[in-house]
Amino acid sequence: MSSLTNIFLVGPMGVGKTTIARLLASILDKTFMDSDHEIEEFSGATIPLIFEYEGEIGFRKRERSVIAELTKLDNIILSTGGGVVLSIDNRRLLQTHGYVIYLHASVDDLLERTAHSHNRPLLKTENPRQKLEQIMKNRHPLYQATADVTIETGNQSIRQVITAVLTHLKNIYKNEYITS
Image 1 (spheres, one colour):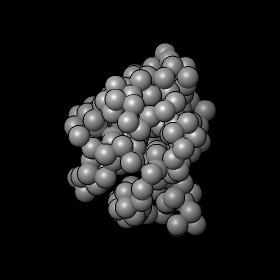
Image 2 (cartoon, helix red, strand yellow):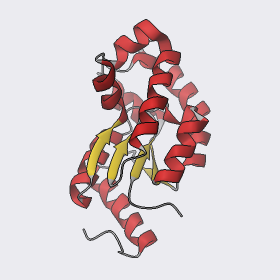
Image 3 (cartoon, one colour):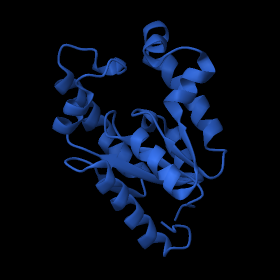
Image 4 (cartoon, helix red, strand yellow):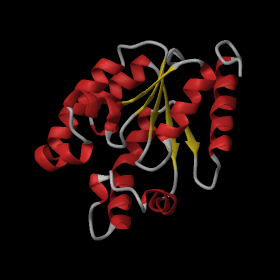
């Protein structure tokens, strides 16, 4: 079983990783980190701009470097980018340096949540549904293989998801680390 010192959230874009991570960090008195934000800070460019000039390959290279640095930290809750699991190195780092939670939602839920977002380069396509279906087909097995647990977020409020995560952590760690 992984350590609870760090908690890493994985899952597709629009599933709520950043919102959930930020709230969990506050509740559990941990430092909130977001890998996409760290990539933007380090590079001085937005994710869409990185995709435009370097493509997905360039972005994934930057992502691997940031994940390697962030997983060295202690006492963090990390919201990862949706494609973090595409790299075997990232998967290993996440698994060996923290507890990995896969936040899952249906394609319908993801479409609804990302419909008005302009910061999703992979969804800048004529058929976002088809793209999300392809992404989930390719990544769902990787999310499952990487994660210690899967938590459903579809049709649930943020509060319900937080409660589900905290309940799971309390059950796994027998209240050793979780006091809320």
